[in-house]
Amino acid sequence: MISHELRTLLNAILGYCDLLLEEAFGSLSEEQAHSLRRIRSNARTLLELMTAVLDVNRLEAGQPPVALTEVEVSRVLQELQVEAQEAYQRSGLDFRWEVEGKPVPIRTDPEKLKVVLRNLLSNAVKFTPQGSIKVQASPKSGGVEVRVSDTGIGIPPEAVAVIFEPFRQVEHSGMSPSGGTGLGLYIVKQILDLLGGTITVDSEVGRGSTFCVWVPQGKTPRKARPASARGTGRHRQERSARRRPHSQG
Ligand code: ADP
Image (tube, rainbow, N blue to C red; front, side, top):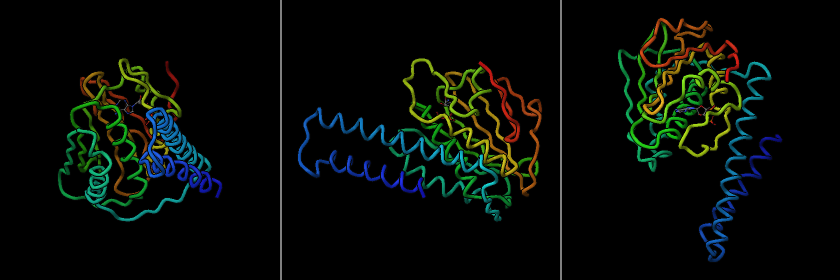
């Protein structure tokens, strides 16, 4: 209830900021508009942070309900594609969506899977000043793998191990702080734990990143697959959603 109240109040603040900025109540000086934009931007960050903290609380407080149902990952991707077209149309990035192999119906929680992929997509957009973002799904090892690749700024090898910890953000040289909460990937990892899935990262500074999510066809939780099974020349880090990452750096 409290979280609902807080969100309602913040949404009202944001709504009034928008109205003022649209000059619905009269024209604004540049100074007034600038101040309002700052209020709006901070209110948005606060809303984002609060939502993330509440999600983490819910996840850490025990097993949140998992609504298992039979889904085609291609359908989940179609829905995300529609959302992304709307949300990121101004990004100037080239989006590609590919589904490979025969469709495999899986038993999972589609809404939670969407939260995972939305987080990865929003990061990909945030950290890709120009270029493309590719989302690929294919059947793999008794489940389905979804890869979200970007041609963005990449992640230094020493940081890959910590980005799944709460409130960890990487300082990217030449880029101003991204805003964000540092909770997105932590939430992703917690959700994948619930779904019995895994996540891996393959990244190179200046060339881009690929986040690779695997979810099982059934609901049985799995342990991490060995990183060596999937190595490439690029830096790769494999994490079981179950394992607590050890701190580095
Ligand atoms: P947030 O995005 O809110 O900062 P996350 O937990 O989602 O928090 O991500 C943690 C950090 O990992 C980010 O701050 C960023 O430094 C790094 N990161 C995540 N995704 C990417 C990506 N696609 N490209 C480059 N860096 C990334």
